[in-house]
Length: 229
Image (cartoon, rainbow, N blue to C red; front, side):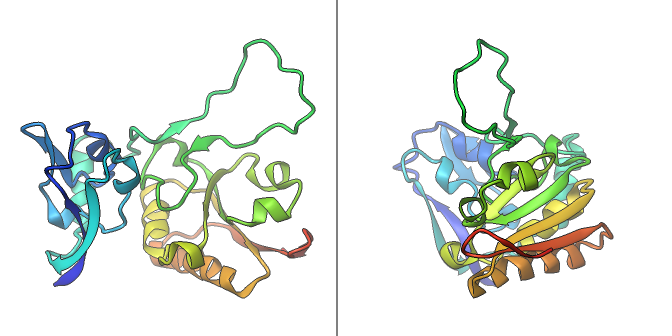
């Protein structure tokens, strides 16, 4: 089949292995000091490895390639003992600081994990287990002043903008929901029409995951008011 898949420029690769660590599906391996796409059927074409590469050696291409085999990926993860949640080099909890206090009147951040971009987030990570998942539009935190306390607090947060990213998040979100013990799903979107893509992707992901968990959609107006909850 013809599909989007990554391409690694061997000449540009410096052998840092950052892309292999960022590839949550295990499609990339280091061979003779260079990154190699060893399992094309493990590559989902989402490109989590692209931002990790410091030399720009990884790009997308459209070509003949075997279909992405999600079941094979999950079996491989299970064989490595990470079926219950796989930490990655780019995925970590944000440690709470207990050093000397800083004189500041700024509100406390409620963010509990990193990364937060849907495109960069791993499919399985320890912080997803038992999590209340928040899927939020990029703009919503800027429009709603108390976003951290009312939405991010006690949630694992993923953000995105389907209009800017130009992707359908439903497949990635489906795999996150299906692969982890997610307790609830909250979608926070703006009132603008383009945010409908985020809501539709999250709802479709939940439906396709086969999970039955509480969920809600919250709509924020461009002047920072909650319109629907």
